[in-house]
Image (cartoon, rainbow, N blue to C red; front, side, top):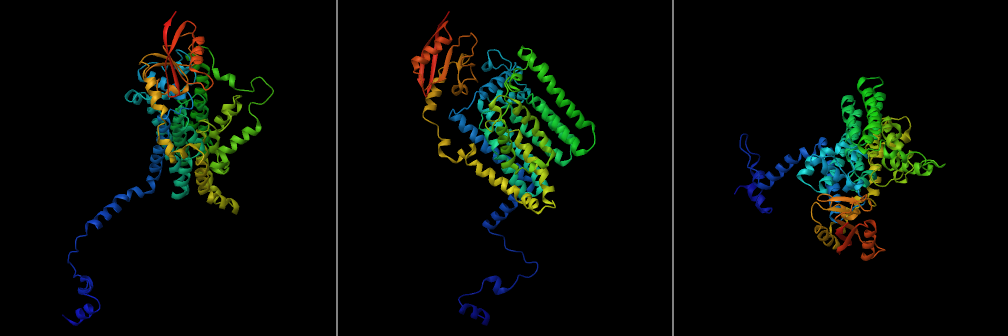
Length: 500
């Protein structure tokens, strides 16, 4: 052993080979890496594309789809329907899926839904419903549409503000109270409006005027009032371009004309009444009071703008796209339209967030120091506010174990409803609807218009015994005789035994 080796050994053992022998001569092959090192390198190389900023909007949209879908499926499993809309839209799409008219008996026997609200866009879901005939098809489609709208909002925010502020605003949008309340409201046709509006306004921010017009034009097929929103987007394009181009002018004319044609001709033709039934909800209801109390209007407007954008969206012309929706709601004398519940504010969320994206870059270079500081911190503040509000909103239920448990009365209720044969006529209230509209002909409770259904299914009234509920049913259908088929899971089902 030479002196160096002996010294090393005496100090506690031989040196590692590389240290003892020095660097390998040039041309000497490196030893092959171990399996752990190879796995780590593959993981780093494989995850690099996933860390690319351009994929952030897609991952955000995918995560929100999972969250929205989980919430909707859990509510469906527990029979926690909050309205009859899921049944209404399933009947309409079921009609399209079988190459028929969108007849919705829940609105009255033989009612064509195009005579109530003009939403032919629902036909897009018909092929999916034909393959998977279930209310879950509608709920999952809505979750996907809401999640897709996250993509353009996040992408536009990242492009104009940077990666982290963009992600913050994208997540704040997905968790915004308006979107969450809509996800929690069963199904509604406005689910199609969110991605259309979001992509249209993103195109406006990018200066892609043709794309903005193409995204906005189909809004006339979503709901009769959204043609005015499409026209408003055309007006926004005119403001941004500062010249009267043919495309934005065409969109303004098209949106207004389509709305007038729909309200004045198409809907009256489909309902046979010669008029649009919702005209009587506009105005002050014939009284001296205004359509909406001022404090209520201010409350709703502040909820739309303050927690989402810190009022900074008011600095952007994109906010003009919110005016038609707020306008018809505030002109109505129906209090259901005034507040912050249900789905009515969902279409406003992409508008206010993209208006904020438009306003923030200018505010960041403002001559006012307080405004620059406010604009710099606003994306983080909007995210913090959205997450704080989420603790009292529907998505918070995903953190509760009870959300994933099926109450013991649900299987019992489903077994009872399964005793109703396919194709039967049924009078029903809200809770049994989701288990019946896909395989029977369902009427709304008390609105059969002289028809005696084969079965009556309803939630057991808290103040009425089964015998009293049976007497109520007999009073509604004096020409028929009903007997109690079952009382289970909080539901009552009566079967018709004879009819005159």
